[in-house]
Image (cartoon, rainbow over all chains, first blue to last red; front, top):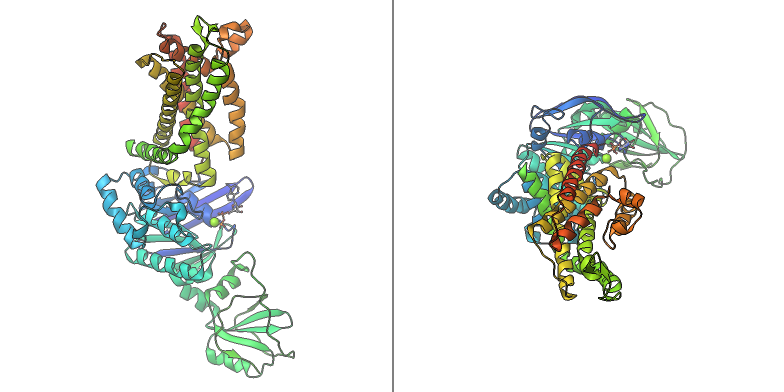
Length: 318
Length: 245
Ligand SMILES: Nc1ncnc2c1ncn2[C@@H]1O[C@H](COP(=O)(O)OP(=O)(O)O)[C@@H](O)[C@H]1O
Ligand SMILES: [Mg+2]
């Protein structure tokens, strides 16, 4: 259980986090979705005692992070954004030191180590030096280390940043497995698919404030069920519809290049925060399109922009 | 509290053990050069404070090496903090600031003792044997305690690894040459002696040399080292808390 109470952090004149309050029940996988600089890491650093809050506090399983510091720290495992393993030590040495930090007995450490390494599929690397591992293996080792002392809460700060797509899916599967074992997970990400795939609830964070918060399904449904991406000239705008029929009817008399697809979490994110989560999206060249007049209006508003990373549904051309 | 200290200490010792094949030569090089340049080349006839210069020099090198090696944990802590980000793992762990500092200081003292063993071995090769009584080791440990505590405090205050090397050149290197390691400070003008009296290394060199040569026990120097060490240690514990932004 995590309860955050008006947590605030100012760096000089910058308000990195503005009185955020949250309640995350036991066993939930909660995702904090926001662009770089939104305040995701700042939140996790305060919850884990690495940074002092300017005001407000939080409770981890009812331990106040400001008053019962050591008890609060015993409640969680932390996987920070940057790899922070001891590269010159072996996999098992890293885990042993962690176990000692958390007051585990030697015997306890031995047993837990072999269990957790097979859980993250690193048993064959027990005595390997950490610096010889791949990026994906280091991530899994960081997760294993955070779970060594069997914490009730797991903090994951951008757990798949910089990983290849297929390795990312492997880490996702691991995160799902951990959640299913009853661990409460607080995850930050700027990958929309990650939040959509993993989270029970998502909070959109922008400039230190939570813009909205709900299940991914509800956030999407608020936006509409079907979307049409229209390319005209050099702009791409998206129209939202409550049903597929409505969308298809609209298309029937259009004469520009367009794509019909299901609404996804990115649509909801852009509509509500006015931004994309990636700092710089690549420009994807638009297919040749027929120019002409188009009538009609969007059902739930629209947005424009270049190179939106949409998941394409059925492609229709005229 | 003990679990945190042993975890921190174990980590430093594991790293040290892995690097030992490189560390031992690096601990030997500069003492060996000093012994050859100042001790051997000057000849056995040169007497300082009633001792052959070589016999005077080796306890000084013991004081210098235990200082620099204890202080060297600052750079280990910095690499762990700024380069590997491992310090976050300790900050997030349920251990007190006190146990963190204790673990690091003990690691510094261990390094210092190992480097002293190397110097004693070199001294023996040059035909100098010292009296390794408990007072000798007590002085070595107190000296290491002072500089390891200072190292932890400064490592928490600096903002980058470059700052760290600057501190070494402004604090440690001058002290290594002036603190009674290479010459008796009694030869200096009174005003200079008064200044050097405030340097912990001066007291470490005095205490270590007296003990190693079986002269009288310099209690005053032990007391001063203990007090300075405790002050630095206290500051170090405070600085660990300050390291949270
Ligand atoms: N130690 C710091 N000093 C000053 N500003 C900081 C510090 N850490 C983070 N910030 C600023 O706080 C804001 C939020 O940063 P962060 O929480 O790291 O964002 P995110 O993790 O969402 O990318 C950013 O504008 C960042 O520049
Ligand atoms: Mg971040």
